Image 1 (cartoon, one colour):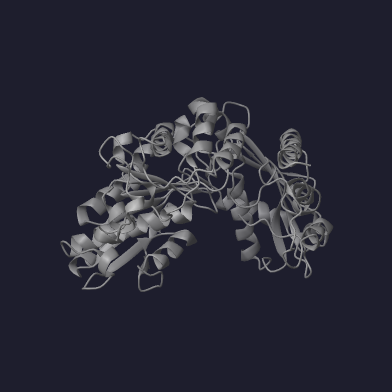
Image 2: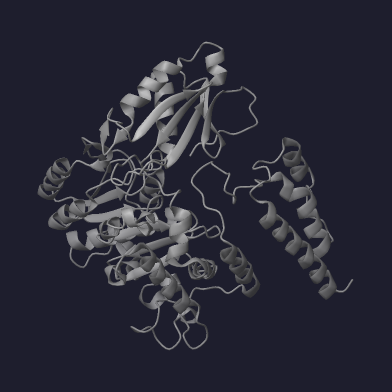
Length: 514
């Protein structure tokens, strides 16, 4: 077989696999069998062979032995572990084209390639989708994900705050020294924020990260009085402050509130506001959440995730900042150390997109913008609104109750522990009744949410927007309150159902922690 024939045969096999998965993704099992996992590992050579298999034989090995051992349906609609997106058809095909062209999108070369201009335009289209004025942010780039975007946000904050504390000082050049001290204030920061703080040298320990009291009616939002008082105290102590706000809390889906006012307070005291909106940043796509776009636009730096709600392939994170000058101050080669071969073609001016290597972590970058652009163009705003309406994270809100027809019906199957007389269904129902919040108030379900029993299942029928994951969060709270958390777990067993299951000592199946 000639090399051309070898490639053509392998390509046909890959195309059949992709088409078969496209046709069956909604019905195939989500998880591989344990024996398939073992076979995948056993099929790999223990050492690198002297002679290669060739393209077709390698693809056959992957298709027949290796791929059956990995997650089969994570890209489908029935995968409920973690917060992940699938892949839109246009994005999937565009991603294959990215691999075929294999361009390293690192330097802006306007006379040679349009790739950096395409990336810049794509990032602007994302702002259009959310409803944020393009002029709100003058710095933007595509990253590997929310963790990398949070790193950029905290690195920019470190540089900006250092220069503000000591005029002319650069922490990128001289480190956090010379009297520069940064305090980080947050309510419930995602772990990636702490990781980013450690990596950029701010630190992630209790001496740096200081908790701020939450709003009395919303545990995911800042108590504005406490925040203002703390910022005043830090100003008197001449310490710089980075405020990290979240938009889309991972356990409850809560979008929080008052971010615009938080931005006002931060601006008053010279603090940097970074908003981690990886989980909820695209909620403003929907009309009922459109007002939140103006909250996000007030951030000094903003993290979004394309491979979650936008359903583009891994990996795709998005970063925006109102202080574009802080990006090259941290990430661009400084002065004479800049290698000539990385210089932009024709010079970087206002009409040319900045070189990605000067505003981000990587010097070598995949053309991540193309699948994102393809998905945006294929669906448009209306298309994203259509498939996002039942997926956006939301706690209960009676802002727009449905007339007559339920919006959601969720179940908790407690048949296993109830059958063993270790679980009290009535106590569980009472707990939910007292804990579910509507418009920030607990125990006032009214006609908005109805709790009932159906066999050995609790049924939650809601006539207002509410997140299924909010039900899981409260169920786990009930287990913990009654000391069940060490032997009972909450498992998603269908699109609308959670089941209470016993832990197993030799459990092969991983819990679906979100």
